Length: 151
Length: 148
Image (cartoon, rainbow over the protein chains, first blue to last red):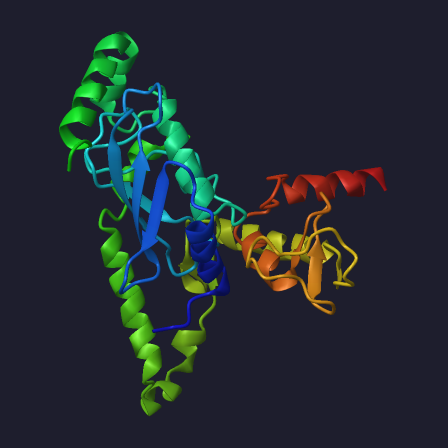
């Protein structure tokens, strides 16, 4: 195994020592670049009470390129598709090596509090979010209860 | 933003597949066969990033991208470098997260953010922006040329 860059070692240590409230990120036992992540649904959002599993992978040229992150738990959100892929600018063209695993996960948590149907990844969800927000929020709560609780 | 739909189809869905390829390359490095020494050209072929998420070998670059990269190299060379003397505010390079040690070669961006030269040059070859404040480095340079 190639030596793990100091930065990844440091980030992992800091994540363990000062965890982000509502977020847990644990490196895989066999691959220190692969993290098992759990994000709790933010308060006052349709995802409140849910525990959302994600996977995060640090590519070989991290931090020059962004971590790859995907929701494993199904979620009803206009910027997250049925495969769990996330539409978030800092994971694409707005990535900067000054960002970290911590800041990426905080941004994802913020995306749950502030869905952006004008920049959709899941078209049908975004459409409903725009034309009938209350029904979309009802669906999101239903999916949270169905897929993100008691499992 | 707004281009996620188009890109989504080319995204690698399985993150684990990425990890496999890392394992493969690292195990390759563990036991290099002596025959590999006869093929250094392929291994040493430089790779460029016309934009942060795009990786291309020299032969794959379009003419437009070659010009873009040549200009970028020129601009980077104009950015001042120095030696860390221990009295700057920044204690840690935010790119590698290693503390600056007196004598380290650093590069100063026009916004006054400082990084290890090797760390920031690696990034600037992908994007001419300051990682910390997102200030475009090229625009700042052009402005300073105009005022001089």
